Amino acid sequence: MNRDDVNWIFLKIKHWQLFLLFSFPWLLYLCIVLVDYWGHFQRSDIIVLSLFCLFDSYWPIILSFSPLVWLFYAYSLMCAFDDRVPSSLKIGRGFALFCFSLPFFFFVTVWLFLFGFLNMLCVPPPIGEGLLLFLYWFDCLFWPLGLLLLFYGVYLLAKTMKIAELQRNVQGKEVFGDFFLFLFFPIGVWFLQPRVNRWVELAEEKRETMVE
Image (cartoon, rainbow, N blue to C red; front, top):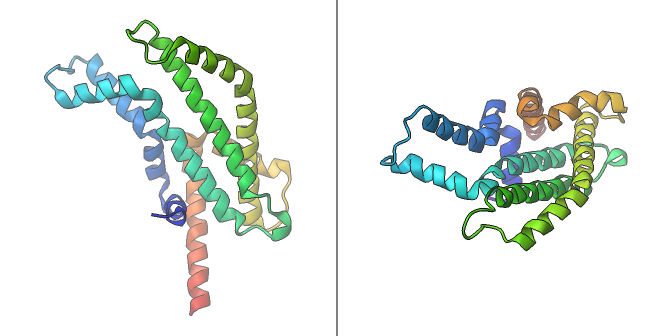
């Protein structure tokens, strides 16, 4: 599967499928916690016990799946709509990818710090004190930069999508709604993805008409 295939998957996928894909690690962990809470967690249940231990040991990596889905989704939309933007109004997908990717890296470092901090009393600790201290100062110094890049990257994505739809330059107030829909992704996807699906269907119909 090449990059174009991945981009096409995120353009064709339905909003509820994308929501479940994004939320899968959190929903799975919630189910395991609820099973434990209601007293159905049995040591003899190898599957549930294995899942619980897996989350307990590797939750920073597992929960990174959700922002990774958002990263691929955002870049897929950026590539698709950037191709429809007039050349004089193109923003540049490379810089947008940089704005998406760096906050993802910062996000992972924060989770690694929390993972190490919450397991400091383990013997041996999963993360050494030196690395833990480095992650602390790294996140304190660069996390604000990551947030700024994330906000700007989301703004570029929302602006590119709006320009592609209207085929003209747009003002900030016209991008305001889409900006927050992308930023609050688990909710916004229910409104954004149907628009993306309709856009893909129209593009396919136009392509078929040109072929005929």
